[in-house]
Every structure is written in structure tokens, then in C-alpha cells.
Image 1 (cartoon, rainbow, N blue to C red):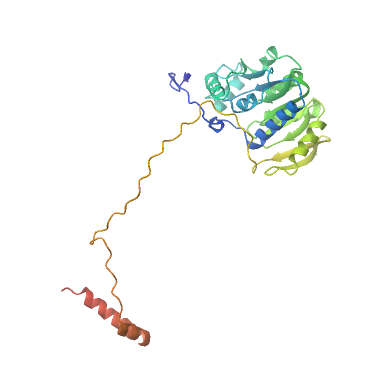
Image 2 (cartoon, one colour; image 1 turned 90 degrees about the vertical axis):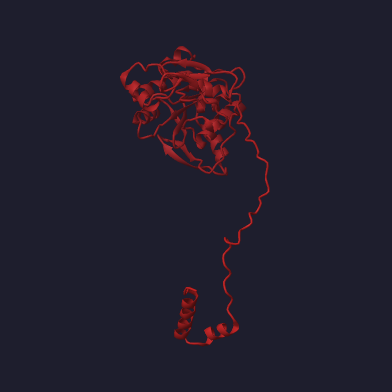
Length: 318
């Protein structure tokens, strides 16, 4: 697969051989939580599809796609290289995602999966034309960082989610996108969004009953190595805060293009190179018994004089 290069010509796209080869911001704590929420829903046969608004180069989409159940639909909505439609959003896209193309996303996704998700190329506001209300069990929102757009995405997610669906909001506390924080906490304060947990980069919430998720998540976290957590009270309800700097990442999707094994060069026994006589250091002269005795008993001043005289005699021309 090829994509336009920076000079407008077509060039081959690199094929990721490992999940870590895909560029993006998807840290261990959020990988663990995505894995936990999706497994929790799977184990309890929670119905619904998956949705991602804002895909960048596909890192989180690849991860979610690996946890898609048979018969479910995964929809990814992103502008990719389409015009944003309004000047502020265009400026943000150019600043943050200038290298994003649909071809790059597709190449990355197909390196790990046989089929692409349903792709909606356009603004996130168009997603409700392609996804039916009440059909999504897990939605990840990482599209525009502008308040007006994020607020609209949250309201759209409220309609698209099932009664027990979970929404994940990226960059809810990053200083470079305060609009996301404003829209997130506004939804908590005035629009019925109930917080479940937070990491350093993502907020997890639901419009359904949060207690079953909270209870099960706390049970999973208790005693788990490498994950720190605490419970705070926000807007009159518990909120789990966690980090996973010491935890192992969950299982990653396996690339369909494994890295080629490096050829092993035959081991050759190392031979010692004989050292020429000229290169060998001259042996130090051994001290005779009388000299050793003199150095031990004579005063230091006399000893230094003897050593100096011997040194002059050695260095004199012959």
C-alpha cells in the first residue's frame, strides 16, 4: 500500500511488525483499562458495538479491534486528510495531526487485522448518520480538542451508548486542550455523566448505573502488582484514580508482518595475534638483595640520592 509522501509523490508505507511500532499515545494504564472494560462486558454478554471518534494512526483502534466479538460492528470516525470545515478546527488539525492520512491508518490496521472497521471519513458530528442510537457498548472519543466539538461528541455518545455503555474521553486534563476538560466536567455536573475512573490521560464514565463497574474494577485492582489506585469523591460519588507505571501491558494484537529474523553469522574462534618482540614491554629490572636491604634501612634522603644517581647513569649516552 502506498500513500503520498511529503513532496506529493507516492511511496511505500512501512508495515508495523509489532504493536509498539504504531505511533500514538496509548499508555499502559489505559491499555489495561480498555482490556478490563471490554473483557468485563464480554464475560457478562453486554450487547453492543464499538466506536472510536478520532483515530490518528490507529493504535487504540487496533487494540479495540482485537477485542471485537463475532457479529459486532466497529466504527471509526475521523477527518483523516479531509478538510475540517471550520477555521479553528483546521488550524488544530494542521498543528497536531499534519501527517495523518487514511491510507496510513488503513495500512497500520490491516497489519494486525484481516478487515478494516467501518470507516466514516468526516467530522465526528456526522457519526450519528452512520451509527444507530442505543447500539454502542464502548466508545472512545479522541477527536477535536475544541470545546464546542468535544461537547457535541459527548452529547452524541450519550445517545449512541446502550444503557450500560462506557465512554472514554481522551486528554480530559491536558493543559494544551482546556476545552476537553471544560466539556468533560460540564457533562458530569449538568448532563448526567457518571465518572467511573481516571488515568493520567483518559476519563471513563457511563450514563448507566456506575456501581457494578466500580465494584468489579476495585476488586480487580486490589492486590494487583504494578498498579496504584485510590478512591476520591467527586460530585457526590466515588471516583477511582489509578496509574500503572510498574505494570506489565496486556496482550497485544499480533502483526501479520513479523520481523524477519536476523541472519546469524558463524562464530569464528578468536585467534591471538602474536606480539612482536619490539612491541613487548621491556621487563623491569629486578632489585638485588643488597639494594632491597639498603632501601629498607637507609634514611629517605640517602635513598633518594641513590635512586637519582642510578637513574642518571641509565639515561647517560653510551
